[in-house]
Amino acid sequence: MYFDTLQGWLGWQEGLHPLAIDLGLERADQVFAALNPNRIKPLTITVAGTNGKGSSIAYLEAIYKAQGYRVGTYTSPHIQKYNERIKINGEPVSDQLICSAFERIESVRANHSLSYFEFGTLAALDIFWRANLDVQLLEVGLGGRLDAVNIVDPDVALISSVGIDHVYWLGTTREAIGREKAGIFRAATPAIVGDPMPPESVKQTAVDKGALLYCINEDFGYEKHPPTWDWFAGNLHIKHLPEPALKGEHQYRNAASVILAVNLLAERLPVGEPAIRSGLEHAQLTGRFQLIAGDIPVLLDVGHNPEAAETLVDYLTHYFPGKRILAVFSMMKDKDINGVLNIMKPVVNHWFFAPLTNTRATHETMMQEFFLQSSIPNVSFGYTGFTDAFKAAKNQAQADDLLLIFGSFFLVSDCLNEFDKSELIK
Image 1 (cartoon, rainbow, N blue to C red):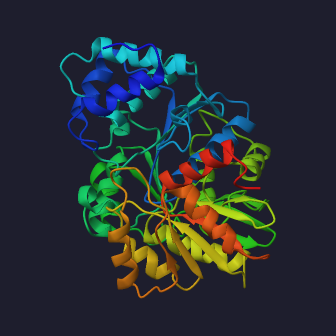
Image 2 (image 1 turned 135 degrees about the horizontal axis):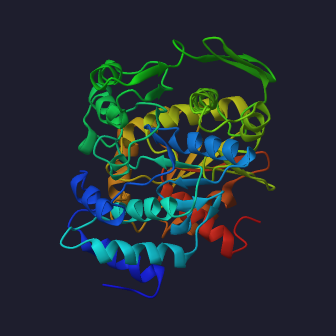
Image 3 (image 1 turned 45 degrees about the vertical axis):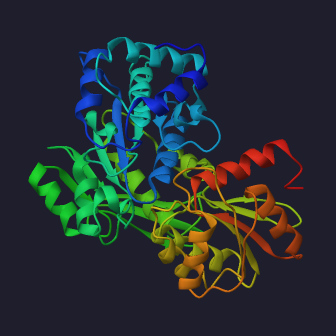
């Protein structure tokens, strides 16, 4: 099958494979071998983690761009346009470039049934190896060991954090999930762990694979001296670094891990301190603690698991003390909804449930039960979608309140798409 438009390709891909999520490397690896028999690749950093993957990629991209290198980034999911998943030097690639990659994939796919994510991963890898890049940054979609990104051997592997999420596919404990994420480690290759309390399975997997393990607070770390901070690893020190552009205490761990990755690759891809400082100051990430100014400010966050919720609470407590918070909220039904509600309960004054059209989204009746279980009384239901719920929240908001939109990538996507085409935010 061949299509003239990106939307045509994507629509077809959504129905090609029987499962939306089907972990395993064999299908994608065989197609990649046909696409790229010599497995040519740029220098590669692969990033896994329950939370912090996107932030780590953003810092790496900003640092390498500041040094003048050609950088490819592959991330998922997208928030507004599919092209956001595949970027070169910070810019989404064109529809034409993606369609051409899809055509090449289809020409060698034979009888291999590929999932939507596998098609996208192969397209990114195909585009990147043809683009004369200096480095490619690959974000794991789900887990690590069996994620399609893992068909490429990284030159550095980084795990930002290990929390409870995607339990149906990865397991119900941090030990099980950590083992899956550590599947991106390779023998004699740096394996960086930015989680301050990693599961033992992560360390054991590094030993079993013969990876070169670097753990935060053991092999590298940081010290804050507001408004600056210092980074160190063995005899290496960088002092008086600027505060990370992405907000939250966890961003120091992400930034520290990234600086180590850059240093470990410095013999092959030299980076000076000015580029590191610039990258920390100018990294950008849509939908992560994204503040939209206005008479009543709006904060967007795609966090959708308890670990992300704890980070969000810390951020709100630090940067918006005493504010009344009205939350427009939705989540996917495969997430730990009660866990998120119980963590956010002390800081949210009123909730507005925004139903989503996604088939994985929690419907209203189910969400009402979750709020009852968490003994949260101030919840409004009965809205047709994001726009309806946001208007209701905004109408109830008063001067000096904060409107918080969180719980799902899909909700933040609906929000930004609506803001782009209407006067809703004004």
